[in-house]
Length: 113
Image 1 (tube, rainbow, N blue to C red):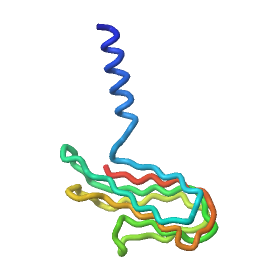
Image 2 (cartoon, helix red, strand yellow):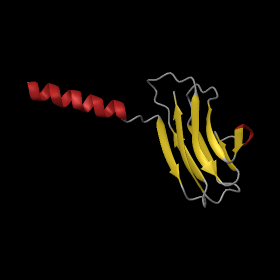
Image 3 (spheres, rainbow, N blue to C red):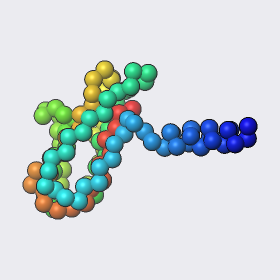
Image 4 (tube, one colour):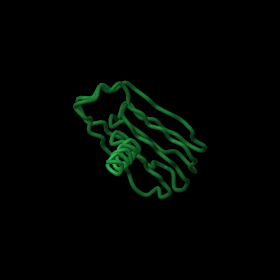
């Protein structure tokens, strides 16, 4: 019985560490566009999307929530967070376009809450 409890606690801890509503991208090569999608779960009420961008690039990049009208151009040293409203019901889309950047190092976290 004791082993079962330990096994269940370990499983719960592992599941809490992996969030299916979050994706992370480490970018060091700026030669392709990244398009990623998170599908909302039906048992959760969402209120926002997040894009966290941290790092540096030699020129401009473009990040978007999948809508051409809701994108952001960023350059040089970057440490920023974008969080527009999101109410579930449809897939959350993230687009990273290296635009004019050729080098750098970025960590991008895309999630829905």
